[in-house]
Amino acid sequence: MPLTTALAFPPFSNPYPPGILRTLAHTNASVADALELTDQKLAELGHPPVTDRLTAGDFGSAPSLETEYVHNLVAATLVPYSVYASLELKVQPSIILGHGAGFNVGSVITDLMTMAETIDVLLGGFVEAKRMSLRGGMLALAVDQQTARAMCRQVSEKGLYVGMINAPNQTVVCGWFDDLDLLQSHAERNGVSCRRLDALLPIHTPLFRPAALQAIARQEERTVDPVLPPLYFTTECRPIVETDTVRRASLAIWTKPANLIESVTDLQENFGINHFIEINTTPTLAPMIIQNALPGTRVDGPPTGITDAADVLPFLNGAY
Image (cartoon, rainbow, N blue to C red; front, side):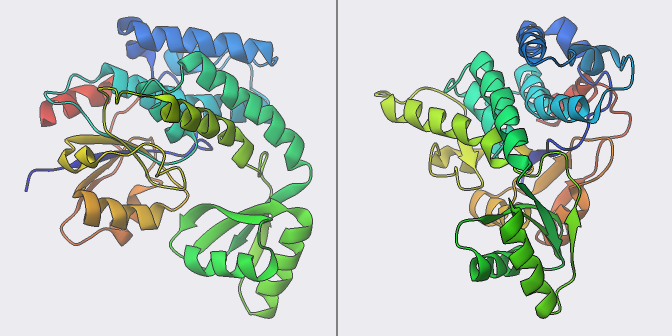
């Protein structure tokens, strides 16, 4: 069977290597425009530009924790978008995306939102999430995702949600402090190991919900289906825009969804994905994919020598 490939980009909390877009920013006008626009939006919020870090590797003075987080946040949209925009595949690629930054990339690619709107919503959501974070936090539970969700429902119907899965048997739950207190007590009574996490921005939902709502509205307004790459969402956004043509995928760009383990199974059983490549400097997703993938699945960790996103393009273009 020919390889049907998913590129796994890291979540937005992970930094990309400095200078990763140095070549693409000079050779691809859409990448350069996206970077310039992002710097303008960052300046409006009082943050230094991200372009130097992504194109020249120049950090300047040590950034504050908040600036570091914001740069990682916008890079999680800019880097997958830039790789996609620069690919020269022999066939049209399919885009397999999770929630969050992956949703934003998909919205730009499918023309549901402009890059300007995407960055504006993203950074506006950061301000709102920062305000909300003063009243909420994260709790890591030493259980799988299904068990964690059941525990959440036992103590709170709407105040807790699964934020991420860091390992097959560790699930991170986000929520308000009062709800987390109830969940922590419930876990300890049932002998489940748990610990609070010290996170800069533990309430993630405001970062992406406005973008999702805006994209939903635009999709509903369409009267003619556009000729666009197939778009597939692996989380609660999945029903928004989806086509069956993803089954004929030749390449997928995939960002980490909260339900990583379930998504690996779904992608393999329903869409024939049998090859995963992680695009990162350290293998954060590959070990979990290996553990949960079907026998015979090819899983490549981060390609060696990735200091520029352009380093991966010859490999991808040559593979198809």
